[in-house]
Image (cartoon, rainbow, N blue to C red; front, side):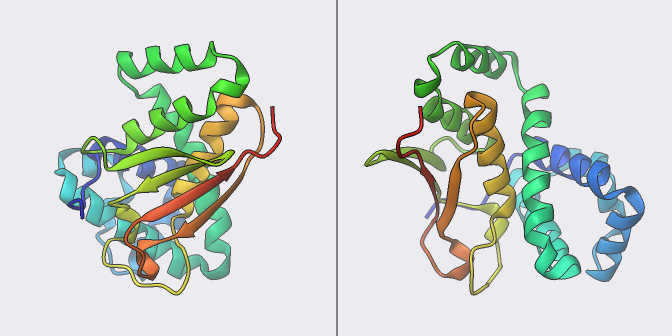
Amino acid sequence: MAEIDFPARVIFRFVETLSAELGHETLSAVLSKADLPKEWASATYFTGLDNIRAAQAYARLQSALRTYYGRGARGILLRIGSKLWGRLLDDATFGIKTQAAVIRGLPKSMRRKPALDLLAHILSATPGNITVHSHDLDLLLVDQTSPTTHEQSENSAICFVTLGLIRECLYWATSIEHDIEERACRASGARQCEFKITIGGQP
């Protein structure tokens, strides 16, 4: 099993997005209730973290949000994931931005897998931790480390931010909404997190 790690630059943008969407006061209240450092309300705090500590913080922040919002957490975290995609693209290296431009130049029906490969590259601290596979007519994104699930144990899937990222990435690539399901999650005992993207008869 791949070692848990996560790019510090991604958690920086994640916290930046949280603060923008929830407001600084609400984010501070989430941290306080979870007994997390108040400094975590500032994205700049995370710039010096190594990849392992970034993964740990990413999991603890999402756990705190799920506890604070209860049943409403799924929708909030999906929205955060959707908003995060644009920030990650804006912050990307020249090479990733070039790759993004190439993807947008492909015929729409050919953009999905390259777009998901791009997302996998952005989210992976170690190449190969996240992979994308063709699955009959559909696609499958497999996350072997899934930092969201670090030291988490739940009865159901919890990777809502990743779901939001996948959804927005595909919409960015195709202008089409997709049905996405996390069909396996490490938090509930699976070996890896698996996200099925249903293509069906879509163009």
